[in-house]
Length: 576
Image: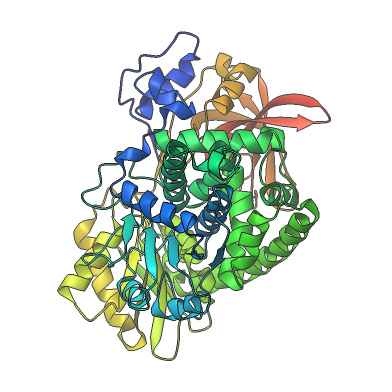
């Protein structure tokens, strides 16, 4: 069972929405700061203009020159899904605009490290590029950019990570996170940044008659929004209005089977139905399969899957990625058991005081999987977590995950300022970051990290709170509301899918599929019965003769043999 502090979401605005919208959905929108119909207008014309990105004209001028002179362009990607989609989009988009000599490389996390490091620049120079474009990386690559520039190579950085105190000396930097950047949607993923650059470049090329002069079909960039949607959802950036608009159109392409054949192959490999696709399917089904390549082997496999237009090749890529992902799951499960063993005193003793900031290390752990493990431990203890693995005999590489209320990169900034030689390198977002430290200073770092977290976080932030959208009336359990919520997406990070609270009588319960708890529930004060399922939960700890529960759940549809009926997707259960 799961003991959480259940809190109903605060309705933050008085939403001025049409009467045609279901009253429950109006309440949901109001709690997510939707003020008017414009906030849920997902037409492409509502996207923020690319003109608001600082230095965008300089980036366009640089790219225009490269296309005109038929220069060699090399894209340097990152080894996660955002990096892979950014790379595929850059190559597809620039090729559609007339680039004749463009290719990519992606760092191997075990050999080259993150970003445009000096090590990956050495590899890049073997391609003799005229221009290096970084996608989803580069904002912290001061030394690598300088090395490339000294070799006569131009560098265009496209990134969305937070900048450090010193910016690289690139020809152009496009990053909405720059201090003086006026782009209002700071939540673009890396793939969103390169999409906006392509929008700006296309506009300029159209203005000068480039496409007509070169007999190039005017590119419809909306057809690339499937890549943008996948990278945006996978990177867990907040789904603000601008991101929701791009994700909504990307999902439409996928549902109509008009997506890139590699994405479709991955969805089918995961057993997802295209017509009922949601943003969560991208995060839970596609992204892990792509990420597995970057974690265990080489993300080039994932990028090739996104670049191919051959259906048979796409299926083969998807099968290989699925196999690698299964290997990743085994490694992850073993690491998770070991981590929970290290933290067993907090698991087994409810009264034990859990550290404010958790740091753990095992010399046998896989460097590519520590990020997933950090997320799992963070979810278990609701604490900021750093998981370390061995980089070499003297250096540890760590992956950090934070909780709401604590900006993890700001914490590392403060540690670096107060203890200048404790962290060798770091970078990242508010909720996720990476770093390296000397192995000999692990204990010292753990103590400092715990102290810094304690200083910057409140007790309330560390409470295990479950936010819900309140209770539904008996009449609200209707297919019309289920469909309205489904149509109201995309739901995701910072715009969560509705989660409701209810009290039920349990009429029946049994295990299906080895580890899923199937329930037959009855509404309180009503004879209405509902099907429900709690994935990855069992009833081994269920006290005898206890048939009343309080549960949080999402509304779903059970489509069995063509028969549609409401099914509650149980998130948490407490015996009542």
